[in-house]
Image (cartoon, rainbow over all chains, first blue to last red; front, side):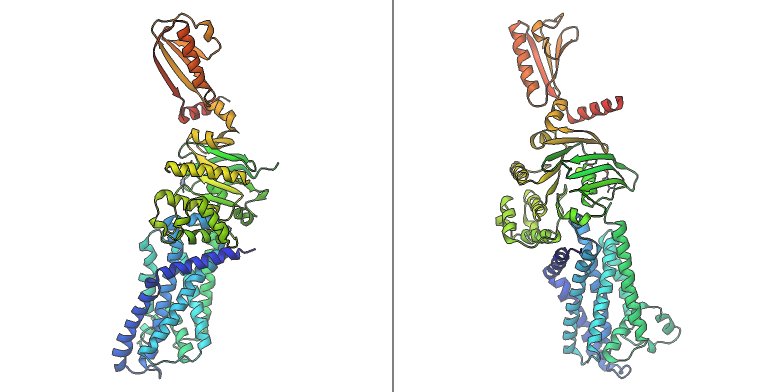
Length: 254
Length: 312
Ligand SMILES: Nc1ncnc2c1ncn2[C@@H]1O[C@H](COP(=O)(O)OP(=O)(O)O)[C@@H](O)[C@H]1O
Ligand SMILES: [Mg+2]
């Protein structure tokens, strides 16, 4: 039987930890995203052509949302599990009647919750700077939840793998950030010349950005089913990796 | 009666190749206070880790409450509390929230009355809304204990509970241990002080280099461990041991210039006998110019036990 109270305790603890660090969790990403909207949406966006019939300011909303979603989900979850390892309080989790299910639902659920709240705030903030609409709101919410959960899982793996704060930041900074910038956040990959267009298709983030963009505007550079399918596949792989980590005790039990 | 904890052939070899536990067999009885006594690096923390889940055993079996840890780990862990050797928690959190968190983590419904009771018993009540980082070292340790007690465990592990703590906390700790024993909680504590094992435990297990050397009732162990030694330096050399001293463990050394006593049970008998010997010497007009007295150290005793074992 799964320990529901244990799951709830972890979840609550993690959400309250984020609440304590309200600046890092909410204020700073909202501020950063707002700056992007001001610069790319309002200032530069006014000079830009509409992309596929969508006003440029509106076009970048899903991409910017994805940018924040990926980095915040990953870093929230990775910090969540790295901190107990760092402070030594992990002994309590290891000695408690909680297994992989409780730990994952607690930590990843909390990280994903934070991402969802953040996404809502960013979308609300965006209305100040640009006009946009959402064609498939329910699918958009589902997709945001799927991405938040997947990258929280990735963050959880990074938090177990990392053996120092630098390593913790490495993947989000050196891999996710560049790939997201190159992944069509600010442009449609149809604007690229060959061979760059084909190269871009190897960037997994392209599929995420376009998946979300499709739920907003009903159009996409890539097949939306490929986007959704690969995101689900990524989620399943992450869960599999974490299950193996718990089974072997890698980096957790000596 | 079935032991509350039953360890068989427990071996742990760390990834570096170090064998921290070597085929340990150990039974702990329900309701007792069991002290695991051994020098630093003996494997005490590793043993606790293997039961509590921080260490993956290389081989052997662990049963608790009649259940197998491999299959019934959830039920077992729910009933175990652990106060680790090292401080470790989210220092930015408050005392109250940390303790509630622990209780929830172990699957217990929240209970304000119980939490308050635990906080009071550890003198933490007025600190309950403080951030842990603002507490002194001793107070932090109390929080760790409160966390371990938050889910009312039946079996409590205390890893070096009094190492580096102040007198007041030490006294509170012993009172708490007494109280818990009265409530029927089984307590396993580790220590590298003989006196501590002597003062608190019902039974003692001696561990060194990953091997359990001896497990017995405290009194029996202390009788074996307590080796009081006294050297009387005599003014005038003696040819033989006076009649009145024949019943004591004494011998003459250095051409009769030194009278050496070895004996005692570690619980005061040695000191009493030395006093008696001194009196007898004076009564017999045998003057001594110096008296040296010492208790054998844990180290001496380990060496002795190891030699005894090696000799079969
Ligand atoms: N995680 C670890 N990896 C490798 N060796 C370890 C680890 N933890 C402890 N040891 C070694 O195992 C031995 C037993 O350690 P420990 O169980 O902590 O002893 P004690 O608690 O009795 O002082 C020591 O030699 C220690 O250095
Ligand atoms: Mg230790």
